[in-house]
Image 1 (cartoon, rainbow, N blue to C red):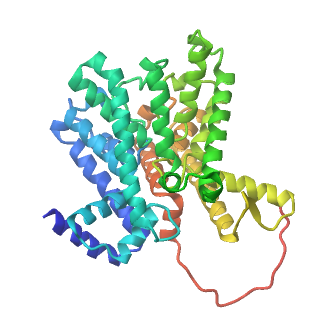
Image 2: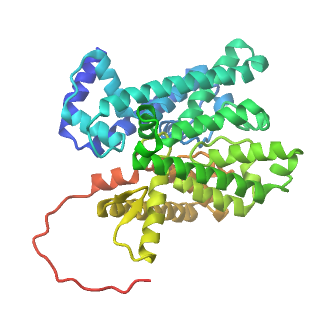
Image 3: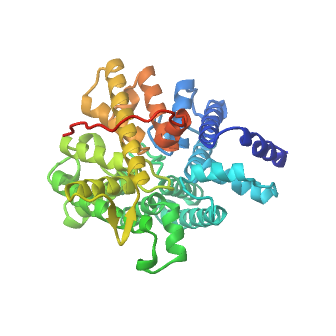
Length: 448
């Protein structure tokens, strides 16, 4: 029966454009997840459909914003549902579907490969199946290692059964940059634990750097032969982590509610490193985010909007998009007509795509803030933080999630959804390609 279902999916998906297939797949998974979470067996006490849909959407989009406490409100069955939704959302529904089709022996045609290319944000359909197999290996290996490491932390405290479940859930959530935790204070209880402070952020980074980068590193181990995208991602990620760690430490060093509560310099730097990596769409925290300074919140917003890597479990406009924006700015002031990096040039279409993605993302964020401010009388920075967290699929919050009204929840769900499937996917779905019949004479507009 399962083979028949996927065969039907393979035939039906031919009739729809790739962006429409992706939107339909993610929307279907959200609806299915909400239905499962609404079952009596999934919760300790009945929850509303609004809570179920919000939780399912947050899990599928690997965001982590929660309107009900995951550890206390959901039963083991409900927690398993959330973990599966996180895994499917982080792995990519089309990637999962192609893996199942391959295992069942269902032929994978060109239309399905095109949809897979859209889901993985690739520009070419060559070597896609090889990339899918690498993705599966990386996911299984990282989550297995993460589970074993976290088991050394949780098993001594919670026992073998419960401790292993805690380890598995948090490893899956961390690698997929989901931010869901079974503890009401996230991982604050282990703020200075060396294993938690080291390996959980490493899961963030590996999951958020991009599967195409990992595949490139797997095949090619020499720097000069790596693809330009890989080089930009590695350098950009390293610079952002170092800068955000130093900035968080400098801004929060003496804040008694965050870093000020820790005595040693090593503990403060360790906590700073954790927060610096988690803002790049991971969503876990080891200090109270609502207690950070406004300046730190603004820094977090910028990091959440940048996000992680393309073809990854992360959200945001992506690191390479941010780097290309910087390169375009430098090229403009140096009066260059092309962009250069590591002996390679970037074409006109790449720059236009980056500009379209950035402008569309900013418009979506500003519109989201505007609508929520109309319907919800709250602190501007808290609501702006919430919107940026939803769009970047991060999951950090200054406490506004539980106070959202119906309109606010709808806005946040839509932003999480768009942030996961990608603003350009939505734009390409809505846009129509029209061949111009009339050409107009060039003119000039004064800018700046």
